[in-house]
Image (tube, rainbow, N blue to C red):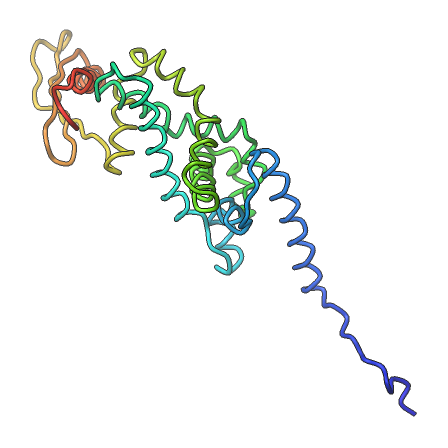
Length: 260
């Protein structure tokens, strides 16, 4: 006699299926906590999941999920737009060069990583074990890039107005600090961050001359961007000559004499 006649037989979930469900529940809880931290509610939570997914996680999971690099690219542009618009409106007396210096400080990796740490982003990133074991959750580049990806996700999910509100809510302190300390920042760092953001390139410094005795040598350096010479600096060391060249270019930008 068939003991199962008239009844439906259900397949017990496999260990693999159970692991998938368990991981999904854990992921959903993590996403919910992070939304509460951001004070942002996503309509499409998959965008936030993607924004928090580092490529090392994708590599360890056979490429079955997309990483956050495209969202990072979008978020970088949205961030630049929001910061530029704010600076343009609220610092009407500043020339382009000074605005560029403030913006470079605000959207720098150091600044964005500091904001990401305040938000606790490192705790929520989906990351491969190898990357995590080598300190990936606290690495400035990963934190800054993930924050940009989150900004890109908010823009796609809620639009520019909501995204602008979020960005200004987390970045106004950095704008005030950068405005207060613009003249104190290292000119090479300021210029490099600006050029990297605008051109995805770096300034190049080339020694074009030396003069004086060995114990009082002066170096002459020219500053090149994308193959074009923009400034020349002199100093008792190569580093000082490079810094002077960067400072000379930044001053010309601040006065509106050159549009880089």
